[in-house]
Length: 272
Ligand code: DGL
Image (cartoon, rainbow, N blue to C red; front, side):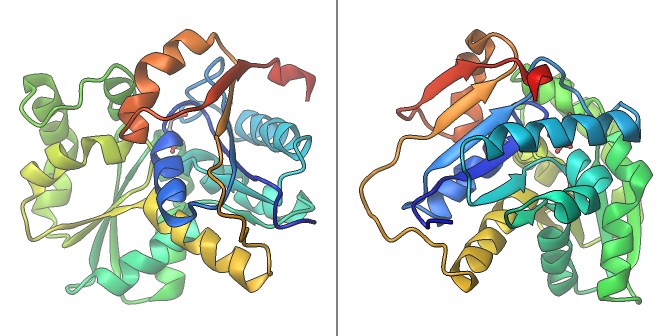
């Protein structure tokens, strides 16, 4: 395996681009190949078997590009299919759950941690199990926030938007009342709602971004395995989607935080 090979990143849709933004920042020498399963999003409301099947197809597609590492930039896939991917992939794999849980346990001061994610993520209790394995003393409060995903996909994310504020209040009130001082944004769509969530939860509550933590962890794994790319020539990310690229172009800048040179190609994921 060459250190010049790309890192493969995938998500059920466009949410994983919030993680790609962090990867490009943390690992500027790396080429990123991203697959967003825009034709089959959301995963968060599907059965465990379906999520596993989709995750394996997504990973197989990335392996065709000789990637040196695979990242599931999706809380749902990491929660439901993480063990399966770890066992079956021939290259290093990471999801978002482990690196994010590790940071949350270090950050909490009162031992009360909130976890928000899709219904599948929260139903799997993946974060809770991991957090309590790292520190049996922490109390974990979980809340599924399924409406956050379509809000983000439709760009209804501004901290002053009435709809955004209402949905945030609806989902986050219980967590606020429970006195958590740390909240894991356990879905890669949710960093786009960071400001609105933070306004509601208050300054004393730390929000932990799974994409940011995972980029830092991936850098550590690549360094340890001697797979960091030392070639500093600028790399153009390649994006692949399973539905028309038009929608991608409209919202990609929102997730990536800026416009950047890239290519977008539609593929048939059912072939993999
Ligand atoms: N980005 C996905 C996650 O992190 C959420 C979207 C979905 O339900 O597929 O869980």
